[in-house]
Length: 369
Ligand code: SAH
Image (cartoon, rainbow, N blue to C red):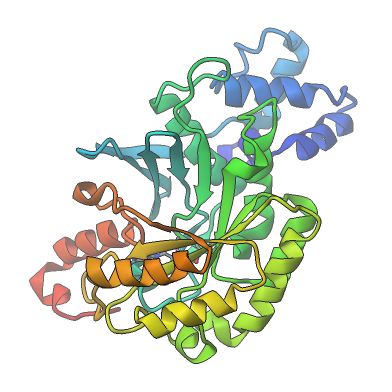
């Protein structure tokens, strides 16, 4: 018998790859839709149940492929309804997925990498360095798991109305796997989410923004965090490679030909760093000719950070300046705080805690790793 590692995991394949796969087997392309429906809409993870597929083909699938889900190792629910799943993707690596219910929507926040290479100075994921990219199966597996846990069905009431690629990692640096997973999210035979309700958040990988426009034109969020290059380089080192002017040009290209869409610009509020009225006015200038929304994110502290969050008053002054300039500006509420599910707290904090408990108090005192 083949080992599990040699088998193709069908969760890794979007419609296009499934069609290629079945065509190579001499099967009709519509098998792709059938498998997508069984797996993603009905949550079936065995071939036995796939009754519209012949016994012979099921046996062949059984031999050569598998439907292997990432393993949920912990589930937590916050007082405010936020839910969080810790998902083990292999022996040493876990990622987190968070569901955030709001009055008018339910958003699932998905991770794209274990760790991150970008080293943003205010992000706890940066502290753990980079481990590896997640496979398509591990990315879509997060939606599979949450969809089932929340009791969603394709035709019934659905709690997950939106997906944001805003968990751990830089999604555009895991481009192919992320795009395949998003293709499955928006496929009518799978999760059927509209492109507008799937948002990819990036620190600004300019060439990949252009590629994304061509292959999977989902909503875009850009982590700006500073209105000038000098400050942005300190917060988001990737800015040295792709400075603000180039990033804004890429954003304009992204919206070219789609008149009603906007890009969301994320801006983390760091006390005394990027939160003065002057910064707000400069931000307005940077965004002057881009259809934009602004999302102010109160900084979420984590162990060993030197940053603190701006006060609510400072955030309000900042927000008023940006709003008065005509930009829709939302201050993101911190959700799931009691289960460490807030922005920038994912797994980093869990890992920090595990590391500390494993290595004892002395290791905890070592500071940043
Ligand atoms: N790499 C992608 C997605 C990751 S994080 C990106 O940079 O957009 C999603 C958002 O959370 C980003 O805007 C990120 O800058 C922000 N974030 C990271 N750490 C944070 C923290 N400690 N407090 C508040 N927001 C944080």
